[in-house]
Image (cartoon, rainbow, N blue to C red; front, top):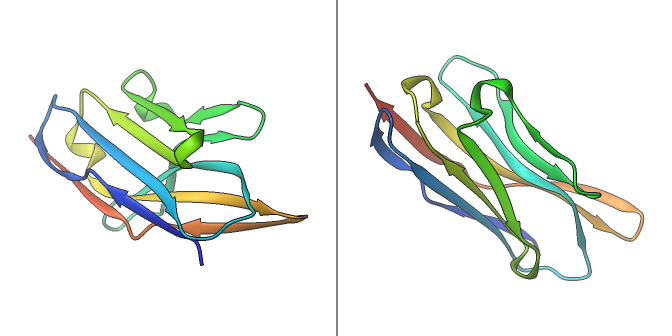
Length: 120
């Protein structure tokens, strides 16, 4: 059974930085079709923050462009989100996701979420 294990959230002042990490645990015989991060602030819908897809494409939501950087370690099936110049509006629960391909089937997996709080 595949699980996504997240770490790295916390409380930081505006202008500070945090780095989120997420890696798969368990399971075998799959490849990563896509991996990245969503976030959900109180009272708001979950939104895509950043993701990379098979083939090399990378997507960022406009509010984080130039401040956040997504990276990956294929050997570890891991994805990272470096968040710089954090703003109070970045406060949210951040969820890692992975679209895993096994045979001809793609299945989505989610991490448990990690809280990021940016104080003004």
